[in-house]
Image (cartoon, rainbow, N blue to C red; front, top):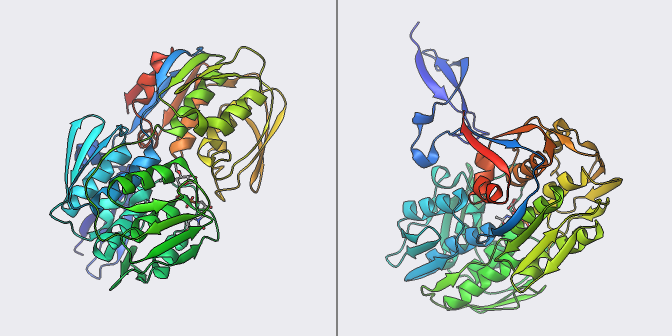
Length: 469
Ligand code: EPZ
């Protein structure tokens, strides 16, 4: 019998995740899986290769010193797609040097735009000659925020075709509210073979009430609506700092958006947008991660280049837990020299406690005196990482959206996996506080959102080494 041999990478995981299978097909094209194997590094190009790196942490070192926070990932991933709406060149400053930003540049270049880095954190994006309106799976699979290309392309060209999002995996992540918003603006929206297609003769401003506060839907509707005819009102809008940052950038490009940062955003449609120079805000979640790192190691850290107001919910919680917080104009000093107390944390949209700091605070609560409760109100299923935390000794019981954590004196090092970006950050924090050695696998998730992660921690006195498997 004649066989064709082909390599099959499971559809449900990105092709660079590391595992693949050999399929043998007979002449009737019936396939039989014959073996699983790990994809070798050289299989892919440098930025797409399967680098199975690990972080090795020698724990129980007190963090002391200063750390400078990078630009906000979740603002950058909205602002970069927004840049393709301009008939001209935008210069974006203070971009974080992270995988998600590099992936978005790659997508823009595939669409026909020109991306030029003038330094590690400054990017010029030139889409003055127009771009394609279609971004396929191959181009966008790694980043969930690829959905912002839908709003941006629909706004500029009145047509967009974009593959459904990739990115962090923690359960169902619908985009129905985004699509509902596009339809309300007059677009026809179809979903087929993993692609979303939206098109319209004209986009007409309207009033949109969001059933649920959604950062992505608020930004995406804002993108499309700023080049619609007339006025669009978004009620029950998300108020996150990166919603405001995206609106500010669009306004610099000639859009007319009022009320970003409040429940009601009004967008007065304009015909054209032009390029602009814009500086991305500091990353609230990266800042929060280092603040919690100071607390969990009994450290003394000045977290620099931040907007202290964005940290209010975390600062209040740390204060309640016995951590000393000292606010300055653009920095916060975190000192932990008293026994840490348990606390109850409820995640909520901004200005509530951010869900993106939930895994990190869980690591801290794991070594605080007493029993703490976390209630996850944003995502249905964001406790997958708890099994990893348990490997380090955490005492956790989960019931639906609530997690009860009974504090232990300290974690004990083990081998754990970063199940997603923020879960990976939580593993670092737990490893810093663990007795002995902690090995973190699947580091590529962490690299998606944290710039120079081990260097920043090591500069504070941590002992983290990156090794290639
Ligand atoms: C953004 O995701 C962030 N990502 C997430 O950060 C963050 O966890 C989340 O907001 C909440 O703050 C980016 O900004 C790129 P949502 P987004 O739409 O916009 C439901 C990280 O680690 N919903 O605000 O996708 C949804 O299921 C990432 O940096 C719908 O039902 O989140 C969730 O329960 C992870 N239908 C809630 O709304 C929709 O169409 C909030 O989601 C959209 C959302």
